[in-house]
Image (spheres, rainbow, N blue to C red):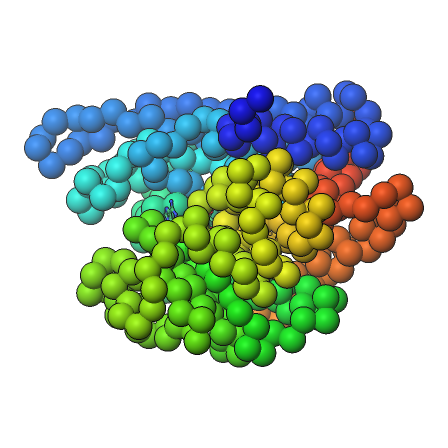
Length: 420
Ligand code: NAD
């Protein structure tokens, strides 16, 4: 049977496996298997040639038992309702695992931002908010940036929502520029959170991170900061990095500034001079101490998982490992740390931004990182404790343990609220 790559079906499969393990109530599973609310909107936008083009967008509120929805807005040419639904579900588990007072949500618009000028982008951003305005709000559902959406776009969206509400609503959206009441520390929050998990995992594995070899797939926001921070915080040796054009490898290590220079001058890290060119597939199979997929989903699958050779697989991207690969990695005893644990730093600092907006009192970067560290470390330890608690019934991988914690908390909230 061909491997299932539809992200929503994958999410449902992961949920069913967790439900089996936890002997969950079938009524509760039925609630959790589908989003509570899924909105499709069509947005007319005035383009530079004077014509109006209609864009399709989505906003999915997956579950709000534990608090308002929370999740980014993606502007992507291949956006689909199934991807948005899956990502909204994963946001529900992510916020629950981090134990922050949110449910899960996600949004997206089918569009090619590279083909749009700034005015068109602003018109689309404002149009999207007018279309989904009644479904979002600081106490209802709080969006944030995601693929191809920026702090500037968040500022336009906040402004549009505030106009509709007739008052400033800074807490309606997070990931705003710091000057527009965004939070300190949001820029590198995802990678920083991942680094705190890596530190704890390495401790647990007895792996010394100083000079540990690291390969990173992706050199965008997440991968770029992971490169910098793993060197700066732990002295790791980043030996390979890639982008959509391919990667580079040098077993002596890569220089971060030269990677940036190569990217700026040639458009890809492959322009890096003193390294071998490799493909993205080869990068994954290099054999390093720490492998960090930080690009896109479905990279480690049933067809290459047996060739993955690493001590720690740190899933900074969303959905980089498929369920089939999960089983193979578990057999190989590779510590695969799941996306919704590893990359939760972004949403946690988004939560801090919302708290600061609502309280009108702003924290230093130091405050932010300390509080982030506390939550990431707690989440990692919760996962390890859950694995231990289930050990008598057989080995449980970190993803399943994270699911068990997250789903259990959402179920308890639904139960207390009398939803089933
Ligand atoms: P980004 O757009 O800044 O960077 C993506 C990187 O991946 C780029 O370097 C791009 O060249 C590369 N890439 C694209 N297609 C590729 C392919 N086929 N093979 C290899 N590389 C490819 O995105 P980002 O914000 O860094 O996000 C990366 C991943 O991390 C995504 O899965 C995203 O959902 C996840 N994530 C990001 C954040 C965040 O705060 N940025 C938070 C949570 C999760």
